[in-house]
Length: 503
Figure 1 (cartoon, rainbow, N blue to C red):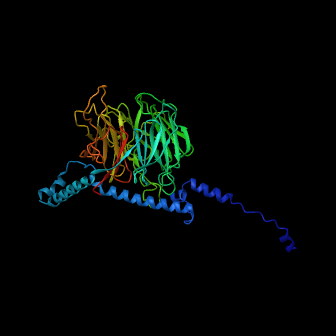
Figure 2 (cartoon, rainbow, N blue to C red; figure 1 turned 90 degrees about the vertical axis):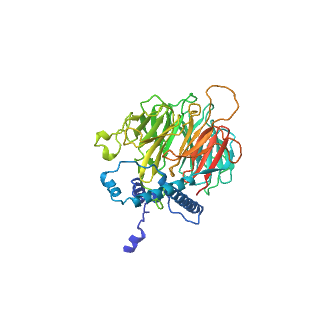
Figure 3 (cartoon, one colour; figure 1 turned 60 degrees about the vertical axis):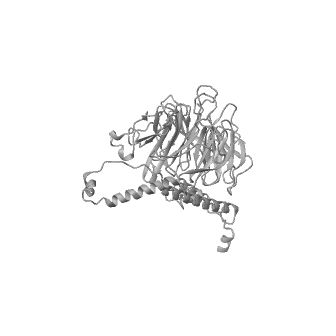
């Protein structure tokens, strides 16, 4: 009887659906590490495994170089001045301040030596067919992307000084690109381009899996209208301005409109809309945090955290010089942040003002700067004034007037770049006379390098690769995120690459 039961016993297959949904639910709730979620284990002998190993080694090497560079120049950050108390002055009365004086002299000598190391030397000239208005270095490959004022994107190999690719962004006629970002740089790099008609295009296949530049036309991964309120071709408008947060998968868009939209780029879904309550167009924005080093939990101690105030605090600059601070977590139409830090919310007298009005001209750029344990926000306007902000204060903590010459009104600051790792800044000036007169003579094209304290380190006026030739009117500047390299684009179509000679 038992033998007959075994003979006619039906064996049902075991379903793996439960285990699959269990793993998926665990992943969505964040119970797995970043490496388990984004970098599944692969066979190192397979092509996918070889690509993964290459990218891990590349990222680790470049991150190590960038961190070492930041630590080397951390002493160049702004000095905090404060009044000494009576107890702090006591050693001077006792004659015990000799060691302190020697330490100060040694620190000053170290700072002077490191400032000399920041001197940049022109190493390469790239002749672009169009006028470059945006430049972006790839953080981990020897790639520089240049966009002109229409729809042409040029891909340059900076190691060999060769243009490898050139393609059209395919935006409509009479529209132009106004914003460009690299995303997913640590893995499969994608290029995000925004136009002044409110559209966004995401390009794939620019960089091969082994780091080589693809000479063919890249593929369009997706395209959508991020800001339908933006009207193309308006005179004096900023077009579409974007800010990307890699770890959040969030794209923040605004521009020639009073709205700010937060997008989940994976689902192309708008998650939040904020009304800025201002008639001027948004010209620059940044989030008050630092995401350098995120994405590789195995080799980064900050992979699951952030420095600064967090990814939800947005610092925006406008065409009339106004600066505003927004909290992206709010779902109200006028989501202007009024709290400076979580621990200060209970103390209303420390609340952050809704806006700052110390600038009176077009905001060229805004940036978040970290050096050591200090965090500051930077804003620069066309008139040349650069201000440093601590959002716990009601006014700027420091101002640098980089355009001290009487030619300020005729030569406005047209570009401002902030190095994301080294406490170093660069400004570009272009001579564009407002009266249409014809004349011969020199034009005040130059690039200034200076520290956060306002010390001007270098003024670049001529092409070292072409002796006697002045640089053209500067249209854009961009620092390499992990190296001390500066790219400068001019309206004469020349892109100059400057390297450090002292490191």
